[in-house]
Image 1 (cartoon, one colour):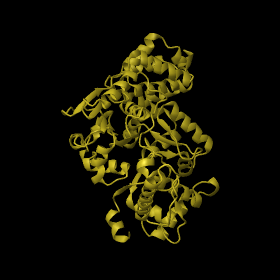
Image 2 (cartoon, rainbow, N blue to C red):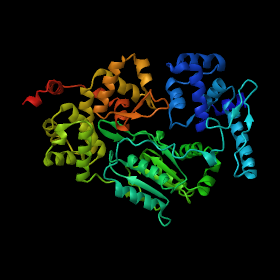
Image 3 (tube, rainbow, N blue to C red):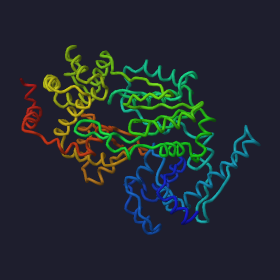
Image 4 (spheres, rainbow, N blue to C red):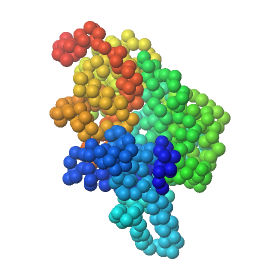
Length: 498
């Protein structure tokens, strides 16, 4: 397909199959990252401008497509440009090839069900090497596609105190007498997304669903310590939601209804409170049988066709277990030796929210004593969102400039950022980068992600942290004289010598 089609579809999103992503990744490494050296991004972008004569994609968008394991959609113009530049064919030609291979494979399956399939050979153009149906090229993805690839990784090493909750969700979501859409509700930081991710993976492990499709609505904004939804025009619409489902199913939007009827799929909508939820749920419920849907939301909306499951605060014993595990993992003797009364106070101040407990551990790690933290907590108002600001604001004031720089850089990206990105774009020395990353880990501000390249780790931020930095809230957190005094006392371990 040529110009008119490209112009028509230029701003639309398309789905990149795992095989196409791998092929693009391999070709990019071969041409612009020879011998495993640093990627020659500028050379690639120059080739893009020269050969395609179109605006090149941003570096972040490019890395999200070529390196992210979970990102499977992008603008049509970018997908088309990548195919033309790296594979010598258009995106539409690749899709046509996929369909030809699928048809050929289907015909051969009818004739030789128990025999090894012959490999059809097709080419994009006269200058393109032969493309064969292997693990790195298109094939029958309905029968051989990878499952669970859209489920995000859990952020915690373990999901404490949620065994009964997980079992309840799995039981209800598979009960034919239950409503087809369940919603996990609860306060921020209670682990709704974490629980949903665990449920999704466990459902596949038990063969309860053929696959899980995962859509995350936009993150909420944190303004002056409170959640704000003052931009409804940015909320996820039904049209956007169903298009994303179509992308993940690799089928036209018109076929989504049929696919949800033919296969038993689990659809997860995370952060549903930031979406046009009534419209989405109202349309989705008509399509779900035998498929099911699971939402996470802080809003307790309850249409007649939606079932609510409350995600409660952790029981105190589980808060203690979580803190004991963190104390052992971080070698925090001051926390492992805490009295029952001190642990009780930490549980109460955190409202039993796992995220709040992790933030507290990060703060205790830095202070190396409990009493100042407990004293400050006792003077803090109790609403959970204000508590998060209590945890994040002093953290921002105490971390070094390199760590702040990294937070700003990652917060400005819609995707994760690799260590190579940080090293190249900010000219960090390896030693300084190690120190800054370690500091962010201690404060539980950064998340480590896996990358296709073992030696190029990627990082992201928790949505709350990203909202604070991206929304400019941290600019208001300038250290006061009292704060500066606290930093001096802690850095010189004056508390510990009292």
